[in-house]
Amino acid sequence: MFRAAVFPLLLSGLLLTAPSYAQQSGPGKPAQEQAASPKPKKEKPKKLTRKERKEMQRQAALEAAKQNRQLTEKDRELSEAYFVDGVKFLLLEDYNKAQERLLKAYQLDPNNAAINYKIAETNLLIGNLKDAGNFAQAALRLDPKNPYYYLLLAQVFSTQKQYDEAAKVYVSLVHDVPDSKEYLFNLADLYLAQGKLNEALATFNEAEKEFGPLDEVSFKKQQIYLKQNNLDKALQEGEALIAANPDEVRYVLAQAEMYAANNRLPDAIRAAQQALRQDPDNPQAHMILADAYRQQGNTGESETQIKQAFQSPGLNIDQKVRILIDYLKQLPNPAIEQTALELADITTRVHPRDPKAYSVAGDVQLLANKKELARGNYLRALRLDNSHFKIWQQVVSIDAELAQTDSLLRHTSQALELFPNQAVFWFYNGVGHTFAKQPQKAVRSLEQGRKLTTDNPELSAQFDVQLGDVYHELKEFEKSDAAYQAALTFDANNAQALNNYSYYLSLRGKDLPRAKEMAGKLVKQFPDNDTYLDTYGWVLYKLKDYAGARQQLEKAVRTSKDGTVLEHYGDVLFQLGDAAGALEQWQRARKAGGTTPLIDRKIKDRKLYE
Image 1 (cartoon, rainbow, N blue to C red):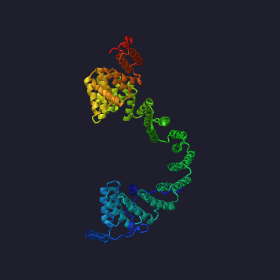
Image 2: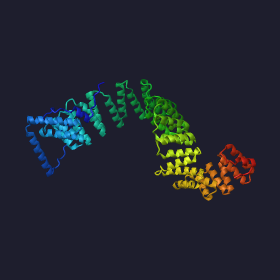
Image 3: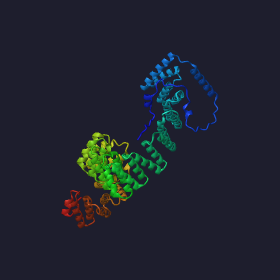
Image 4: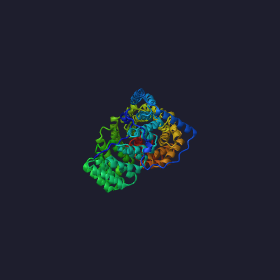
């Protein structure tokens, strides 16, 4: 099939293909007067001011003088030399020198079309659009058959967003200049850019009459019909494209997508299956089928198709990431979790050298509560590209959540080498040292990190809570209390601060009324949390409110198997005179672990030791 070239107007093209100095002709009609019929209705002339009339008379006198002046051979040679010099500087992008030489050429030979054209081009390049337009129109008057002059003038108008004027120039060009029908494509694209769909469609039809059916034209007409909500015409153009290009699977796929977008699912499936007969591994066809089957409620076939699409390297990693992000937005969801996990695995297999594959797989696995698998993929992503702060953050947070001390310390140290000014890594490094029973190192990391949180009070509060815990471990109680108080100043409902502060006060037997207030507030917010119930019960125990303590601890042991909670409950029962019940709870506590060193003596002597 014959394919006509489309000729977008480019400045580099103008510079390389501009007419020579000798391309001149006598004066002709202005471009605006050569527009296609019907001619616009004439408006009543605007009355000129005295100043405008005087300026017009001056310009007319200058023009007349130029026309009457005879150009000597010496002037012609000098003008030509200036012109050649100007074009040279224009090519070198030295626009000031180019303009200087060209204007000197113009002073000697103002009726030379090529000189006017090059001056117009120079003005366009430096952004002087008014002069660019004036000189371009002058060039066109002097040589109305040169297509380059029309193209330059159209570009000047387009640059000023005067699209109607630009369109008029193209109309004049294609109708008045021989062998210029190829510029119908430029005109049609200009109409499209303006949203003039009917005019664009008519122009494309005119181009097809001149050059025959063209794939690019059919495709653009199809897009116009879709914008006009004329689906039948759009599909008709699509079928014509397929018939004219039986080996081009992209047209079949475009047709399938059009059917799918308009809810004609059986037709979409038919077209996508046709595409697969031509290209059995085409991922786009599998994606169209996956979506169509999903809309029909055929979940099994939809999942089969999307997995086949993911197995193709032709579906690039960015497309796969976008699809997996859609799954992420729906997780956790048992209905799609397994499919999401399988797609994540396929992505890492097909793209084993791309960190994005492992990163998005980690995200899917994390939301599916596969934390260790997620961390493994995050670490693979970092081995390929260790510059991603957020991936490091995911790794160390999983380490902390899994309480894997060695991993947490190793990974936070690696992250801090790359991001020494990121407070979050100092925080998790401090947590790691806390897990490792290294409170002095924990304090150093936490204090260092807290200095970096001046613009993030929420993060500062998290540091304060952690510092409260570590300073308590070091028996630096004043610093511990101050850290908790700082956290609660920012957020009076900080659950961790309320719980730990009140519990540690109870262990020290200090400020118990305040401890009771904080623990009670926390239990009111979270009435079913066994840890908070235990704290509140133990504060009441320290206040010798054994009945109240029993009430809270009975709720706690319904769900908790923690040795500390069970031991506390046994102590309360003993204080209430239930020695047998106390012994039973102490025995359960020892089996569970996490008790005080006194648990064996309590059981052996069946007696409370504090």
